[in-house]
Length: 113
Length: 111
Image 1 (cartoon, helix red, strand yellow):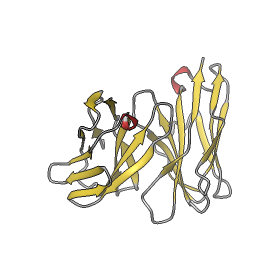
Image 2 (spheres, one colour):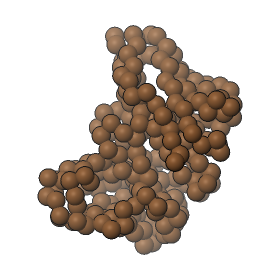
Image 3 (tube, chains in turn brown, cyan):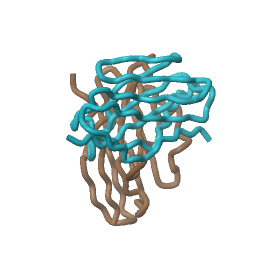
Image 4 (tube, chains in turn blue, orange):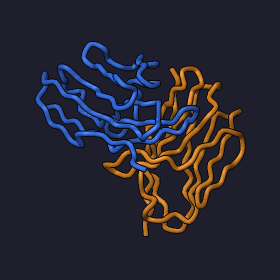
């Protein structure tokens, strides 16, 4: 069974540029999470989807961040415009219905110059 | 503010020794507790979870939970150099089903 897939794995952009990350969860997992992990810290939840509905986006900086999961499968996280402080690893995770166990993808390492 | 605290380390142990990793949490309503291992440059990988007070063993790993003290720990027996990684404690808050991670403890197992 394939794990959580994310792309790109690395992204370098200049500040004020837009950037997008893509995630495909484990097949059959209806819950999808986006986390941000700064260097030396644990992941912090940005948004959680149950199918196509965002059920927890309280930590998402809505002035510049947006996310979508239109068909309840894969998801895109966007930052526009990016700031220097957005440099981090963006992790996607998924879990199956009724399960509390989350499985993480390899992450996208973003560097904003 | 729901907090999960871990000593950042590094915790250095010799090969074959027991490594003890500790975590405290602030939300008394937390019900589920997870330990993830994260190698440098890689994503977190679930090691084990625990829901009930007491010990839970899985191979060389033992998770211990004390809800009265709001304390969860992970013991690694017969530590190997391949166990060298950052260990993340995560706590699930039933309100909103939100997982909060600690900052992680870096473990170094020296041959």
